[in-house]
Structure formats: structure tokens, C-alpha cells
Length: 219
Image 1 (cartoon, rainbow, N blue to C red):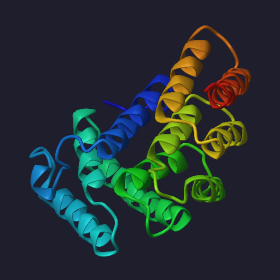
Image 2 (tube, helix red, strand yellow; image 1 turned 180 degrees about the vertical axis):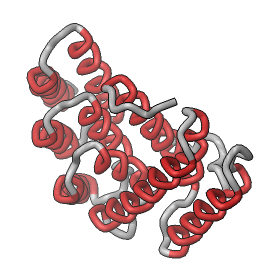
Image 3 (cartoon, rainbow, N blue to C red; image 1 turned 135 degrees about the vertical axis):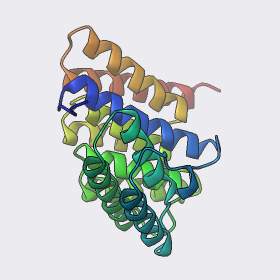
Image 4 (cartoon, rainbow, N blue to C red; image 1 turned 180 degrees about the horizontal axis):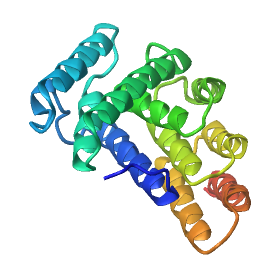
């Protein structure tokens, strides 16, 4: 299968990565290990991926996402060369996410941050979210859900500055996880109905912010 850059395939692949981040955040299924790599991979390819996994684990990054990425590539019929390239890219993005989010970032935050970087977020955007998060909650809660939402919006072609500003404003006001999920779902519906992504995000975010303020005023 030739991996053509078509919007539905991009979104589908991104949502796969975001599902992985969500599962990590919720303590879901056991993470993949090198032993779980598909048997269809050539021996040299397996060795390369295992070495990459060893390298990221040695610097304190999660290696399970690399093995999951390789398995996803096999499932989609990608060539070994394409799979190795994708795994290398993910390893680099995990490192970039950790540099932006800080050494205390958890695995779910790193995976979601890497996903956001992959679809257009800048390290500066991740640092801004981290700073806003720390200022609002002291960093005592996970930033994984907001990062998942950011990556999802970017995968749906929302302009990066608009998506980052929307998520940052929700983080600043201590929005619960349900609000980020609601934003993702509402924007998806709007886009499917033909609405411009930017207009959808702006309106939906404003509505959520009003709801947050309303909840605070209501005893």
C-alpha cells in the first residue's frame, strides 16, 4: 500500500497516535516492548528499531511508542524503510517534546506532545502550554489531555496559532478533561458539516469559556 498524503489518512494516523496517548494517560493496556514487534519485519529492521528503542530509553524517554509505530506501519503495509524513517522521526519528536515540556513530563504528555509537534505545533507552543499549566495548577495534573486536543485540532487543519491559543485559554481557566473532549467533538462535527476550522474553534472555545465562568458563579 502506497502511503499517500491524503487528509483522511493523515487524520486517521494522527488519531491512532492520540489514542495511544490517551491510553497511557488512563493507564490502559500494557505498553508494547521490543518482543512485540511484528514478525513481518526483516531482521535488520527489527535490530534498527530495537537500537532506537534502547537509545530513547537510555535518556529517559518511553520506547513503547516506537514499537507501536512500527506495528502500525506493518498493519498499513508500509515498507521497512518507511517504517524505520517513521520510527526515527517519532524518536526525535519525543526528544523535542521533552525539551519543550520539561524533564518532569510523563509518558502520556510526551507522546501527545510529539503528536502535536508532528502536525505543526512549535516547541514554543508546547512551552507556553506548560507554563500556563504550571501557573494554573502548579503542574499537579497531567497536561496530556490538552496536548491530545491540540494535536487533534492541528490534524484537522486548524491553523496552529488558533489551535494553540484556544487550548491555552482553556488550560488557563482550569478546564476539565470533558471540555477538551467536547471541543474536539464539536469541531469535528462542524468541519464535517463544511464549516471553516478556524471559525469553529474560535466559537466553540468561547462557548466553553462562558460555561466555565458560569459554573464558577453558580453555587
